[in-house]
Amino acid sequence: MEHDRKLRREIVSQEKRTREEDEATAMPDSLERDYVIGTHDEEIVRLGVQHSVWRPRVLECWRRAGITTGSRVMDVGAGPGYATIDLAEIVGPTGHVIAVERSAHFLQNAREACRVRGLANVRLCELDLMDEPLGANDLDAIWCRWVACFVLSPARLIANIAAALRKGGIAIFHEYIDYGSWRLAPRRPAVESFVSEVMASWRQAGGEPDIASSLPGLLRDAGFRIRHMSPIVYAATPNDFVWQWPSRFLKGFLPRLLELGQVDASWADSVRREFEEAESDPSTIMVTPMLLEIVAERA
Image (cartoon, rainbow, N blue to C red; front, side, top):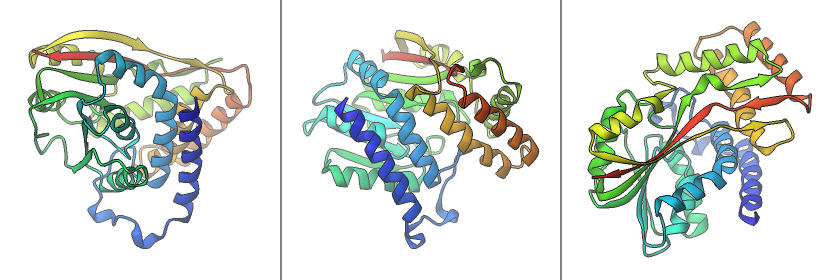
């Protein structure tokens, strides 16, 4: 609980820093490898809230998968480094964590977070998962959350993960299996339209929001044995902390859809208005997008 409170305080501090950040230190757009969901400062803050919501479930998953003191772990698609920091603290100075991320802006945030905490057991690697191998072949575990749904070739991603693991090493995935399950009760048609547009934007960028349905077969083809699979879905009201995860995504991704030219301002206004009405009603229930947790062992 104390760690979660500390993380939430850090998220608030990050929000303040992003408002005050000196433009001279920002990564030039020409050097930044963007994502369909963006790599801007507001996205870093949103990802911090998202990680805080999911952290209890993630820590339990890692524990059951065997990640412990001395483990050699890779965080694939590490983003701003929230999971990387947790992993580094778990494996301790006798273990090490390799954080792989293509966004230089995200990696700068992870680098600063590691410096502040004095974590010397983290190596940050800027590379594109579709263009370069992950390296190593002796890792105990690889953590992959919401990465396979965005890459052009999930099969290539899994092949790279297999090559980086030792025999008996563990690959852990948190990926969506039914993104369209995200809805409100009472149902809100404009919000459901937003969910459809999100899925369309990811597919237009070459990804697949429901990629988890394909992962078990791809893992078996790559020589993995499935050890555990479990669907995860939450039902939350506006007063629940879980609500903040999809709420912040909706509010942050609406401008992104406009920026991508996929929707118009009147449509965005209707989604925003409908969601605000739902959020102001404490009896509203939100069912979150269904995710599949997969733990697989390399044969």
